[in-house]
Each structure stands twice: as C-alpha cells, then as structure tokens.
Length: 372
Image 1 (cartoon, rainbow, N blue to C red):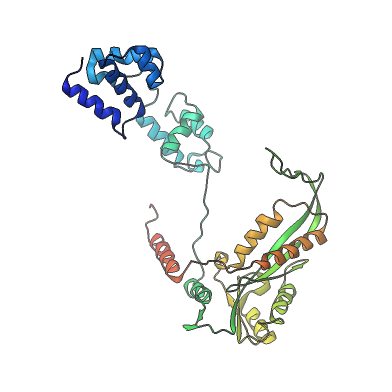
Image 2: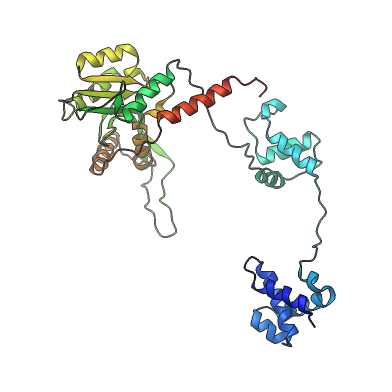
C-alpha cells in the first residue's frame, strides 16, 4: 500500500531523466506491485529476474523509500591511510638522485620499493602506487626538456623571422617580387637494407618490418621551402658543408621567379654550413638579391622547413627499407615531386604576440628565488 506522498515520489523517480537507471527500475517495480501486478509479470515487463523484483518489494516494505537506495557493501578494510598515500605521492615528486637512488626517473615499482625502504608502509604493490599517482595525474616516468634562450638578440632575430612569415621586413610589407625561403639540412639519412623484405599490412595485421638490417651508408638531404607558396626545392649530398649549401642556393636562385626577384630572404639556423657574418657576406657576394636571415640560437622550431622535414621523417624515412644510397635519393626526390603536386603553405599561427608572451613568462621564471 502506498500513501499519496510515496506514490508521487516514486512516480517522479520513475520518469526523472537524471535518475540512475537502477533507481528507475526499482521505482517502477514498487509502483507495479502497488497496482497489484505479480512478481512474474513485473519481472517480464522490466526485463529483470523475478528474484530482483522480490528483493526490492521486500526492501521497500521494510524501509519504504529509503529501502530503494544501495545498501552499504562489505569489503576489506583499508590498508593504507590518506597520510601514507600522500607520502608516496611526495616521493614521486622528488628526483631519485635526491634520495640517493641510482635512477634517472621513478617507475611505480621503484616507488613501491622506496616507500617500503623509507618506512612509509610495510608493504605495497606497484599497482596500488600507480593507482594513487593516476588519481593526481603524477607521471614521474615521463619527462619534458626545456631550455632558456641564451642569444642576447633572441627577441630581435625571432621578430624579424616572424615578420617575414607575415610578409613584412623592416616595418614595410613585402612586394610581389620578394620571396621568403626557409632552408636547412636533414643529416644522416641511412640506407638500411632489411634482412627480410617488409610485409604489407593485412586483415588484423600491421605492416611488419624486420628489425635487423645492413647499413648501406648515409647521406644528407638539403631542402629549401618557399614559405608563402609551399614549394620545396631539395637535393641530396654526401654530407653537409659550405659547398653543398651553396649548391642548394644556386639551385633555387637560378630558376624563376627567384632569378629575377627583387629580394629573396633565406631563413637559416646557426649550423656550420651557414653560420655567422661570413656566411651572410658569401651569400650577398654570390647573389646580390639574396639576404641571409639567421634564427636565434636554439630556435630551429621557428624554421618552417622543419615542418617539412617532419613529414619526410614520418612518410619516407620511418620505417625504411632501402637497398643503397641511390635508392634513398630516388625515394626522397620522388616524394619531393609528389609533395609539390599539392604544395600549399603551412598555416603558420605563431606571431610576435605569442613570442612576447613567451619571453615574459621566461623572464618571470628567471627572477624567481632559487628555492621556488
């Protein structure tokens, strides 16, 4: 028997969209029972076992609406306190060397052993440690590298490059006869001939590449990317150096539209092939319309040709199965031609505003106390 308040509460539970489905079924069972339906009919209608219907009818009879809630579940008592869990997490936030442990980084198993050795717990499994760390997204087995800019002209040089990407130089917009080239070298591309041929992918099977290989030498791939048109010009050389880079420049500057351009800006890093004022002078002497623009030290991430090299690494070099260096060169040149068929400029979004924000954050870190 239900009074008016109980019936109203059960009807609200049975149709409330935010109620858990289990509670909806329990409310429907009680409502159907109050209307005189049998256990068998209710079980068929709600698609549950008849014992389930019987259980919730009895619980409601004994405790009314409170009986529809889940009963406290018995279980093993907690072995570790919140304090112990916090102490293990604190261990994970220390470098192993600070505790005299000859490791570069912690694993869950290492932390479990250190927690026992430090007297935090008597015994603990690596799975428990991993579960505690996951709760706070602590991952001591991973690392991220960083570096502070040490070029005193970092902001000036980087701003010049970003202005060129935005088609401006010295505060003036670039004209139709001015071009921006991003150039660099990808060194030590090896010819690795696998001991067994690579197997193509199949149904429920990944492509399979033999781990063992024979070395067939290495070469360098020099590339120049037209930043605003997306075209790539490249060549393979036995190694990098002044002469190979000069040949890449000649390859670009002797073809149109660069041969008759008003100015061609070459953005390069500080590699030995094009380092310092001497390289700038050589470029100007050989090609009066070419201007060499150096990136700051440790700022190759500002060089757009690195994006193209990343594509080459993922699509051509890894994994590879080349018979010899000629095979490597043919593949690289064929991919370059294939890439240029649909070439379009990269959607570069890093601006001088982003650069200013980065330098402000770095400056704030430099002035923090050492203990921080």
